[in-house]
Length: 562
RNA sequence: GGGCCUAUGGUGUAACGGAUAGCACAACCGGCUUCGGACCGGUUAAUGGGGGUUCGAAUCCUCCUAGGCCCA
Image 1: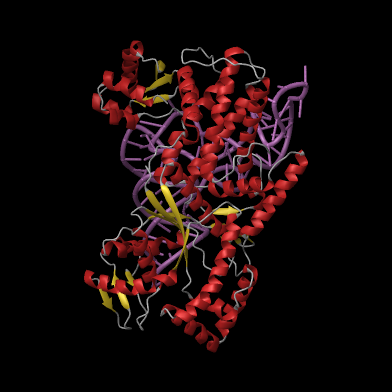
Image 2: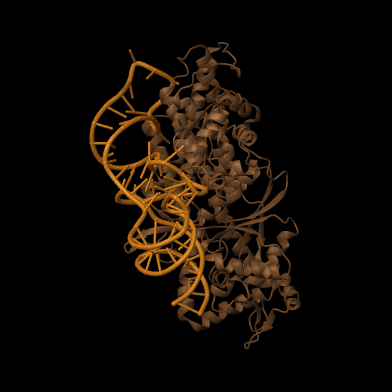
């Protein structure tokens, strides 16, 4: 948004470094105040003059030296406010968007670099509930964001097939059960095992065989595990979430054991009184977070614990690329820190981690974490089905031609992505299935409206004027606001990529859609004339790819009709 | 008991330390002889509490309260 022009202007005339100006420049809270503002309060200290005086001096000094990108300048309450040339911005930004189309907004941050993203990684004992789906939906959106930035993401799903849970399932299941049945068996078996010591011993027997890498046992459990994962992935595929590779924990038993030697060399490994290998992680930031910053790596009998295989797995991933990202629930924060410290001890790079907070559910007592066992849970499948049902109702009500699945998907994803990843979501059916206001379907609706205008224009077959940079467009409030929002897409992409935070894109797309609808309501395109009509057509034409690009990052289909 | 995260209208949320705290849902009022009413306009309504830093705090520090997560 001509920030460069503002910086250059100030730099030449005011005598502060470009970096400093860049840091100070901000966008005024109201559009009427201007497009860029330089607050002069910090300068007041250095210059030993009142901010109001500085702002006044700067603005009168620059008033007659404005480049064509800046149309006017004003000093208000210690701020120097810059008004950019909207005609120029509009023509330039529209041209840029239409030139770059699906690439518009991308900074080519990745430049083809391979990046490995691990997300979802559900335990293979039941189908995903909405809480777990947040992991997959955020992960998928990050993958899309990275792809947009020209990284080459490879999506991995880590399967915890070495666990007591798997042993319990192996004891109770044949391997041909549905996920629902499997879950029931798992819950029943867990209860039985709790009460029956003999049964529990059997479970541990299976577990230790798996942990020891016993091929026959693993082969047997593998079938059940694969079957379970297949079921999970199928549900997630309804949301358009895909994986490139599935990695089994059981494949890292050997590599994990071998790591003991590496850790031994660090001098931080010792055997505790029970004969377990323990890694001493004291002396670092964990000191205040844990009473004893120790990481237990093995059992007394020498078999490796989960973390050892996890370490080996993360080292394996590094063979493909040094750029690793992992999406983990908030419950894993401390565990992950311990893992990262351990990796660092043997000079291995830990993945960059994105944590997200749980989806809570309303209960009689208030709200709590979703729990399959207590039955306080919304399954993803159920959520999808309900959303499709609602979408069909809406379509019937409007007698429109919409794709119920895509609309449902949009509603689900948007409801999960719009909230800051660090915040809990309290699941609410009514809100999640609301298709009005700030929602996925609203975004799709905006795309559909924009496309509908272009369809009508196409039928007119008139030659519209080409807009030029020199044209006086006499833009209205809504046109300017939409234009600026189009220009701001780059900022949203930049911030979202830097922070790996899809909610920034979600918030941006909603604002863009809102501004488009405001434009739609006040600025008729078909009935406009001459240059104004041409401009509005171009503006609609430019809005579509930006909406599409942001929706694609969110994993929402920008459908043309609904 | 210790650590991490969170707290904004009735509800859900936004806001690089910057100007009058933005938006949605709900409620109420209004807008189709005009490109799709899953829309648009308007009204009511909010920074958990106490200290501090700063020219300026929802934002930073500190104590307290409440919730989520982890360690014990």
